[in-house]
Image 1 (tube, one colour):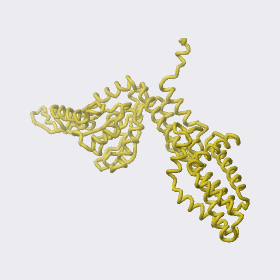
Image 2 (cartoon, helix red, strand yellow):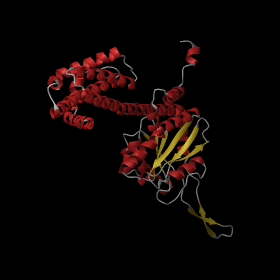
Image 3 (cartoon, one colour):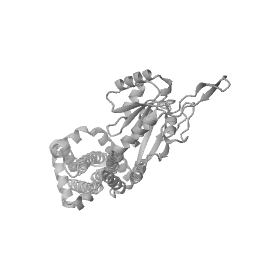
Image 4 (cartoon, one colour):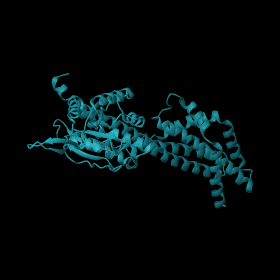
Length: 431
């Protein structure tokens, strides 16, 4: 490979950008799926903007009153994040650009306290916060509790650096801080995290000042925030792998959205496919029930199966021709004939009985045959849809096993009852 070719190889950042843009602009995604995944697509666009602007997200995470907001204010040098003794003051995620680090555009993000939510809501919020983060600050104000450990385990991912921040260090002696850090480290052995002690908002202290005349006077002093070690650690992480982290996280999120899109496409197609199948089931059931010519009605029914398979193939983007659809129909019917020979025997018998039945008996016979025809087409449709979902193949099982599994798992009685009721209603209306 020449030097010129090497120089034009896409960077990790460019690869992630291309992946996200391809996902966003994929013309094969139906509009209905795009509407259902609107929130995900908005997140994809945010990630594209994030990568183009070389942004890195640092998210503070922890319980109420551990000092998350104070910590971010100290890091940024601004009183941007609201600090309050009220429980749950931070209601939503809050963002602020941090211009101190010049190599990348850094965004500081505050989140609601983890103990503001219970059960699934807390876990969901934790996962959402972790997904958008490139670096996580897990803020404590003492030794880690069991619930906090569980929260940390939820958000911990190997591709995201985690800094466990022991805030309010001014409340402890040096020896106490060392013991707390050792305890946290012991309890979180399976989690890749670095521990730093800071004082984001030190408590005021009273000093005794001796004046020139020898008298003493009390003076209240508020020490400056002590976060230099944390800042340096963040900068070291970003210097070493900041751009790689953001590109990797974006790519992983793009993969998750891509999987969501694929699942939604299948769901939408399956819903539309079931409508197609049931439409042809009804057409076949009524057509067979109304057709007075023995056996010929079954040929009409086979023609409907071919038409149904062609329409299903279009739904799944394969567009089979008539010859291909006929071959597929024949393959499916051959497997069903082996599995359900008795059903087809009753079907042929019902067809022949039409010429000798009159009055109510004709209605009963026609309904029976129409119901079986409905059921047969339903089976053909389910098997054909499986074939198309597998990408125009039977997978490793083959048509015989696929047909057997589908027949086994369908509730034949409920389908026949549904068919009988619809066909009887139509016959009675016709009469």
